Image (tube, rainbow, N blue to C red):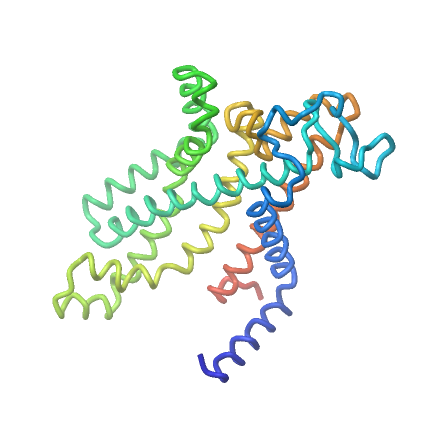
Length: 306
């Protein structure tokens, strides 16, 4: 990259940072959370999945800034004596993993079907559109609750504990693909009518080559924005399922599981077990949504107000 291009990119980034300081703050916060989750085994003082390391004598200790705390537990402990700081690091790790992988499945299915519908049209378009409409008519949370409940009833809690992460990823991913499909279809309909697509067909390019080499790169911008916001939705769905007891088990807590496990303790005064994971979850969701808004404005200047 030339020096001129580097200066231009640096100037563009500086302008973006000046216009969107909230987006920069959100990106920094997400980066810190992601790095903390990635290196959780190295920085967490306790393995929250190792039940043998818990001591019930350490149960419900408050954070270090409250009276009666223990300096070994910065954010206090839960009802099992689990270090809450370690549990939040590992729990956020699971929540982010489920959210990102679920969106990978959503985008893979949705974008592929949306491209097919928009490019070929006719019966293919009608069939995919009807499938998407049927899927959208069903609540994602309702579908996930039914599937997770049936899985628990059929295979038992032990199987749910062993396959909780892949099952959550699959359920949330399969439930939300129409969001990508509808956007990809609409954008493909626009691009397929342009001259460069006609030219590619005229020189003998196959349909597969036209779709993947020409149309797909030109419809990525709105899909990237949707992917960002869908990660937040997938994380929220996982948290809701775990709060209802149909997601991650207590032995392998996510942020939703931690919030649920401390819900009853709030009435006993142990507010930190629910409030602190809840604040982390809210911070992550707000940061993702703020970053998604900034990406939308950056990739599509027409969406800006004024």
